[in-house]
Image (cartoon, rainbow, N blue to C red; front, side, top):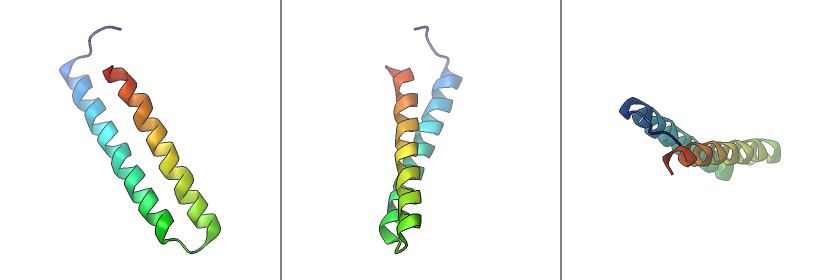
Length: 61
């Protein structure tokens, strides 16, 4: 893999942080939801955000 620029590194950090925040918020919303469909929606959204974060983290290895 080639080296990434400082700007690319900053952008990755920003995106990873955003997906982490989204993951945490979606988990919180899922825990607070009473409706099963809404709870499942937030759980799937949290999982998707975590998967996106993990994919981006691969660029840092």
